[in-house]
Amino acid sequence: MSAALPSAAHDYKLLLKKGQWFGQLSSTLQSRLLEEATVHKLTANQVIFSRGEPFNGVFAVINGMVKIVGYSANDTGKESLLALLEAPEWFGELSLFDKQPRIHDAWAVGDTTILQLSPHVLEIILQENTDYWREFSLLLIHKLRTTYAVIEHALVSPTISRLAYRLLMMVNNSAASSPIARRVLTISQDQLAHFLAVSRQTTNQLLKSLEQQSVIKLHRNSIEVLDIQALEALSEGVVS
Image (cartoon, rainbow, N blue to C red; front, side, top):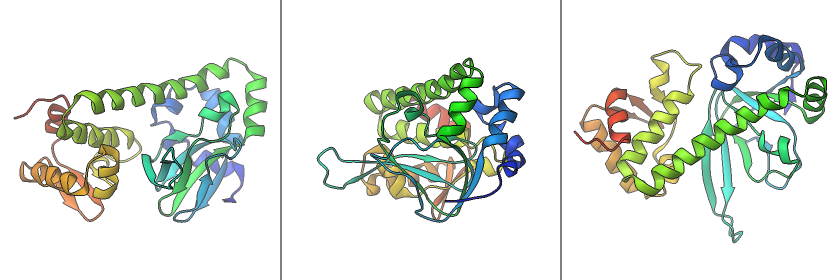
């Protein structure tokens, strides 16, 4: 990763404040984090961290996309797509708490810009004010709540509801974008199929059905959401 001057991170304050976690921090902590953050410009498939590596910091997506990947338990090398992160999402905080090695891989999907708070920087900030541990715990708790919601949907909801729920999550996570841009989701049908644990053919059939209902419009490697209310109803199991 190639780092720019730390002061450049301040250019992204307004964008980051649109995110759920950073936006609720005190202005003092926001400024402190940005004073110490470094900016990294990544190219496609560049590794941010890999499973088994030591903790190397907490990160925020500024533009582009980051892929979080797991692997099969029997080490056959089969890849499992766990998350696609866009601005202004933060990630990598789990190892901050337990100091254990990374359990997933994180890669840049395409040209991507991220911020990094290094372990040394985090140690200094948290020693300066131990109350800041609570703020970082809220980042972790938000991830846990989201994870439990996804698991619940996966266990009790039909595939169409899980698809609608996943698309809504991506819309809501793209808080940094304009109201129009937020409705264009950069994701392929193969990636969606991984999330839903179904075949690409099944995913394509469901997406085509939503397109016929004017809920979405399909593009190459992206999906335009036309009717958020219809997606919300489908995600709750309400079929029109």
